[in-house]
Length: 431
Image (cartoon, rainbow, N blue to C red; front, side):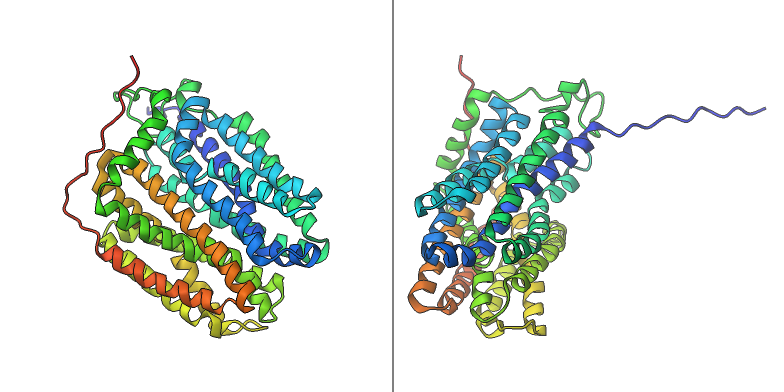
């Protein structure tokens, strides 16, 4: 007689719930990433503000987004992931919601630039990395890829909705949508998210029972470690090559296309809702391109990948002025697909080169390289606005960005792969 062993009941590890809430939180914060391109034309029509002025507000946002990111890990170590994420979402909601009552340009800079810049910067790539590293041992790469794609998915979800709202009920309805979306996620974060699995008496997902948990980092030294990493890495040519290339990446994505594609298409007679739909398609293929780039980075020299990405991007920008029209043609669809695949495909090879060159400090160094990405985006946002106000069109902005891509391809190829790890001293905890 045979006996059947009782079936073991499987319980979903809470790490997956934390990752799901993190995805939704990043989705809510990403709502504003879609806002500027949709709202520039309506704000100009109502207040008469110039494109360069509104681009300056976006530039402030991008700079603070980038400069906050390297210190976000320090904030999470000191105050906890849950508190930082909830506070960041509240800042995004306030910055977007209070625009309903703004009447002066300085209020636009304060709300769009400062409040939302600090909020979104506190939930940048380091937030995704923190969740993946603390809660997962197995599937860590998958979770990191999914959370990184949340920004693109947020753009996909919000762009068409905001364009329709701006076109039907006005830009205030679009801003209110972002505020409500960000604020609605706060209760989920507070109820579900925990700083570490140890807070629930658990191990990270996939962790072996015989491997002890790493001690929590010293919160008092996190900010100093970030500054020390920058100081040591900035003495190397590799850091500057990566920073320059990634700054151009930011200039040609968030700063130029993300902010000015819709106004530029509108200049050619294309309705805002149609242009927003095209930019949303970029978000779809961005997800595909990011996952594929991660797989290629494991097999191909990251430098060659970067060269290829920047060359394709430069060609696309060079021909874009000839593709824009009042209707959707096959050529502009091809541009959107290729640009979407290339949008953040640069992230995996850039992160890999940082890790290879700087070892255990590679994540901190990548945080600073990412800051250069946002600074480049801010500069491009402002310059493109000035070009539009001065010449009446964006043509020279597109051509200039294409030239910058050639520079990024050159400096990426110049990165040396010697296999030598640059030592970045660690800060000792205070006695």
